[in-house]
Each structure stands twice: as structure tokens, then as C-alpha cells.
Image 1 (cartoon, rainbow, N blue to C red):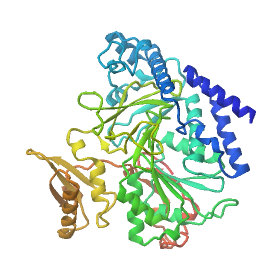
Image 2: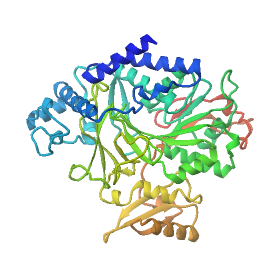
Image 3: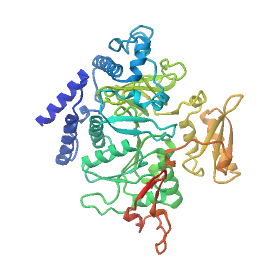
Image 4: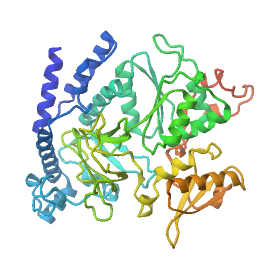
Amino acid sequence: MFGTALSQLRYGMAVLRNSRIRPQDLERIARDLVATLEEFGAPGADSALLPGQAGQIDPEVRRTVTRRSLRATARAAVRHTAYYRHLFGELGLDADALDPYADGTGPDSWGRVPVTPKKALRGMPGAFVSAAARPALAALTTGTSGTPTAVWYSRAELDVTIALSTISAVLGMGLRPHHTLAYAGCSRATLPLLNAEESTTRVGASFLQFGTLEPALALDRLAAPLGLPGKAPQITHLSTSASYLSALVHRAERDGWRPGDFGLRSVGVGGEVLSGPLRERAEAVFGARVTSSYLMTETLPSGGTPCGAGHLHHTTEFGHLEVLDPRTWEPTPPGGTGVIVHTPYFPYRECTLLLRYATGDLVRRPATAPGCELAHLPATSEVLGRWTGQLSTALTTRDLLDLIEAEPEVPLPARYAVTEQPGGGALVHLLVPALPATALRARLEERAAAAGLPLAGLVLYDDRSAMPPTSPLRADLREHSFEAVARPGLPDRPGPGRTPAVAAHGGAAACEEGGTA
């Protein structure tokens, strides 16, 4: 396809020159990928070379592109944003001289650029918006780790992101025209919802927005026959957060749902730590493959892809990854744990510009060079949790979820809190269905000791109000539905495997905070 070849050439030249990307070039590439799919039923053998697909590149070329991209991004940030104009002027930094491969103490070292804390973006989002951009959409984070962060996107950025998401939906998710994807995320998550709906429908697949309904209703909808011409009989793909998936798993196990009740082929999870035990339990309940990825509203389209060896590999095409010690902001050595610090590249990002943005997400660097299928990309562990102090690296969120979510007796999503003891170690407070729960306590303590977790003790509760405050979860962004309201003359909700009388009508849903049906 000659037109596609020209679009790919223009796109490649824009990347090499750090010039503005034409959204229509990426849209053309995505459209032709979908057309290839419709004609041949599968992507071509050269699909790994498409944008965002982690194709291999010569290391020296990558170094040159990285150096150029960082300088172009810094130059745009200094020229057009109030925050970085002031910062670079105060420190006497030259955006055109910065080099990520220079000696860390040299005058041209990229490491001289101060890390941008999340609180700065939260406190003054307008100071990071380029004066040369045309803001079109404010994407808010969920706020589970604090005040929601506002990130502005231009129309061109949205078009680029949607085109890249379409390519990823075909090649990464395996989405095909006869599939149907259900999005079980909060309806206030504007950017993820927009990307999911646009990319799904551009592939030719069907899209349903669930929201974060009461889990019993969501399970009914997942199991209900669709009866759509040219589509699979039931929903085939589910996109959700780890905590809401855990709520679905808990309810499905309790109510006796089986894999044969559903038509799911794939469950994509993002936004929170997905533990190994939850993945296994979800696959057993739904009979579908469960995968996770790493994406952030602040750093899109950059992200991370897991490999078969358990690493998280970070794209070098859309941004620059660093793993730094959150106390000193020095590079984390191999085998050490640090925080992801990311710089999304201009021109993929042209509205909210960020340099060395401290995400707060903890990862561990591999002790030795990976030998997996994605070894050509920078690798870390999967996200371990969020940095909240020294204890959060010694006892990570992933450590705790791997321990707790392996116990079917513990209600999901798990409600726990961690307090640091004066003499060292962590005291874990956990909500359980009933006390004394002697056998459960013994199992948890035995497995924690076997894993070498630094627990000073385990305190169980059957009353959440008596516990220390627990962290908010995305599953807490629950939305109401008229289906959940008992109405005279309507039958009770049917059990697993039977079509729900009310859910089949797809009743309207609204968010708890000021929503209307």
C-alpha cells in the first residue's frame, strides 16, 4: 500500500527530526492495519515494525535519537511553559547541551535537571501547559494516591494516542471485528474511556461501557447473551482495574459462577498492582487470559509491556525512562529498588510538558541483563507499589497482595493497613469476615515467614471502622444503577448462567459524586 508507506516514512522522519507528528499519518497506518486484518484475518509479518510495537533498533541509533528527543523536549518545555522557563533560568541550564549519557557530575549532564514532583503538577497544572499548544481536553487521574492530577491534551495528541491505541488493540489485545469489549472503569476516567471506545470501534469490534457497577450486576452483564449480528455470542474482552477485578472474582467465587458461563477470551488490567494469586483466581473463574500493562495519564503514550520472564519492558520510542532512588534521586543500581522517573517526548506530547516526572511507582531493576524476547528494551520488575517512605520498599504492595489475595477466606478487594513499629518492622492490619480466624492467621504468618517479609505482627479485624485508615482503591469509585434498586413487580436477580431480566436492558448508570441517570 503506497499511501501507507508514505505515512510510515513521514512518521519516521518526524521522529528522527523531532518535528510535529501528523495525526493523519498514524491514523492511515492504523486504518490500513485494520484493512489488512479484514482481508487476511491476521496482521502482516512486519507488524512488529509498526509504531509502538517495540521493534529492535541499533543501540547507537537509539542513543542518538534519545539524546535528540530529550533536548527537543527540554527546549519546548523551556520556551513554552512557565515552570521550566523559570527552573532552567534559575539553574543556568542549556536545553540544547543536555546529554543523558554524559558524566553525572558534568555541566551538560541530564541529571542536573531537577526531578519534577507530582505535587508540583497537582498544585499548578497550568504552569506545565505549553503556550504554543491548543488545550482541548483535561484528563484527570482517579486520585486514589492523592488529589487528582489534571493533564491537558491537544486535539492532535488525542488523535495520535487513539491511533496508537488502535494499533495496540489489534496487535497487543488481539481484538478482532467479531469481538466485543466491556470497559469496567469509572465513567469519570475520560481519557482511558475515550481511548478504549475509539480504538475498539475503529478495529470494527463492539464496545460496552459498564462503569464500576455493583459486581453482581457486572457479572450478569458479562454472562448475558448479546445477540448481535456478526459478533461472538457474549462479551469477549474486559478492561478493568485490579481492585475491581478482585471484587468481581470474590463475588463470582461466592455465587458459584463457572468459566462456561462467560465468553471471555482476555481480561486486561491496569492502574493498580495485579498480584499473582489474583491473576490465577481470575483466570480460573473466567476461563480467560489475564494480562496487565503499565500506562499513566501523565506520560502517555509511553508505557510498559510485560514479557514471558516476568519483566516490565519500557518503550524507548515515546519517552525516556529512569529508575532513581526516591531519597537522593541518584540512579538505582542493578538489583535495587527505585521510583520510575519519566520524560514523555515532544512531539508525542505537546500540551502538558513534563521533564523527569517522578511517578511514585516503585520497581526493581534486574540484577543481571535480561535474556528474554524483549531484552532490547529497558527492563524493570512489574510495579511493586507506590513510594510512601522507606517501609514501602521493604514491604511492598505487591508483597502484601501476593500474601493476602492467595487466601479465598479474605474478602476482596482486600482491606488492609500497614503501620511501622518503633523497633522496626511492619504491623499489618487486615479485615477478615469473622474472628478469631485462628487457622487463617496461622496460614498468613507461615507464608509471610517463608517469603521473608519483615512483619512485626498481624492484627485481624472483623469491623473496618476499628482499623487504621485503609488506602482508597479504584473499585471504591462505585457507580449506581437502577438495576440495583428493588422495584415492585420485578423478579429477584437470577443466579449464575441465566440471563438477567433487568440487566439485559442495559439500565443507565451514574457516578456517586453528583451524577444523574
